[in-house]
Length: 132
Ligand code: SME
Image (tube, rainbow, N blue to C red; front, top):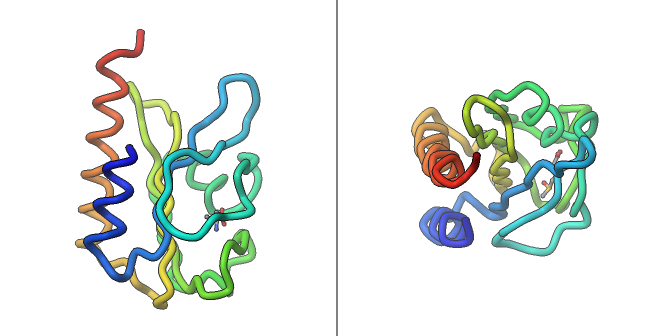
């Protein structure tokens, strides 16, 4: 997961913050895991908060072209303009997600989505390989 966030972040100048949030076992909260970019104040996010909470609750990718016009948005950096959150699934259940913030508006194209969903599937399959 560390390698994936580093590769995605370093290979794409539009991906200014890239990090995993993983679902806690005991409560409906996402906890920050491996990330690349400036430290975020949001190290724990409840499922009813933010774009991150919405993606984890729905189990679907969320792409927001303009974060400032989305009332769900939890600000991390004033520079962030757009965001994509892709849930990590293990046997069809959400176990976490990969969050990417961009300093550019509408940074995430269909190709970006395909690349990131593919990367996240690798993580899901890896986690699945040693989960009961
Ligand atoms: N913007 C996210 C919070 C996490 S930071 O972007 C790293 C949200 O709205 O859930």
